[in-house]
Amino acid sequence: MQYQGVLKKMPTENQNTVQYYLDMSSDFLNMNQLLNREMSLSFVTYECLNCHLEKKIYRQGFCKSCFFETPTAGDWIMRPELSKAHLGEEDRDLEYEKKVQLQPHIVYLANSSNVKVGVTRKQQVPTRWIDQGAHEAIEIVEVPNRYLAGITEVALKEHVADKTNWRTMLKNEVKDENLVEWRERLQEFIPDEAKEYYLASNTETNIQFPVEKYPKKPKSLNLEKEESYTGKLVGIKGQYLIFEDETVFNVRANEGLVVRIELH
Image (cartoon, rainbow, N blue to C red; front, top):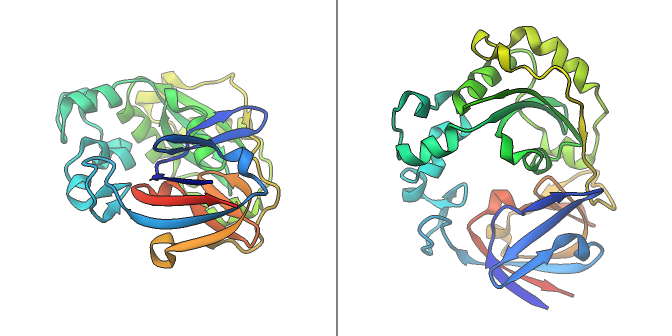
């Protein structure tokens, strides 16, 4: 069977084991059902997720011009502390920025390769944690806008990591941590503006990923360079497909690539 479509981040469902899906234009694949199947991935062309033109992808699934123009790629996306919609100040499109920034946001701790702090919109819990490959996570504060979440993250990352080591995450070389204790230790470093939003009584969320075999030395697949690859799918974690030969493919990092998938 053969499928073709433009890569976008895999939608997920947090069930007993995370369920992964891949949107291939006219087909919607449940990737869990493809575990232990051999498949071929082939690079076809590019399609910008914003203008949908056949233009080389620059970052985040966008061509270069769209990356610097679309409001969905503003600096405040990666750096929430730069959010200004609460002040009525526009970055690229104030209406869009108000819609996204002026809604409840969560500052959280997630354990994927190590304990790290992060920010996400409340409606993206637990999706954000799944995408990072976190096997456990907990909310620290729930604030009414993105700016407050951003300044809280900036303050807390002085005392806890804010990055994930993708190799450690994929090798599953992680230990369980008591995230309630971590949250309590970090409470004193929450900025004054966000202290009233501290979540004192919530518990950890635990996440199970569909992985049959973890790689010992994961090798990242550059599909643009290699053009095609064939291997047996043995796991999915974060937004990575894990193959039996320890090749891994980051679907999210390859958004905007049009690919052909053939199942054997």
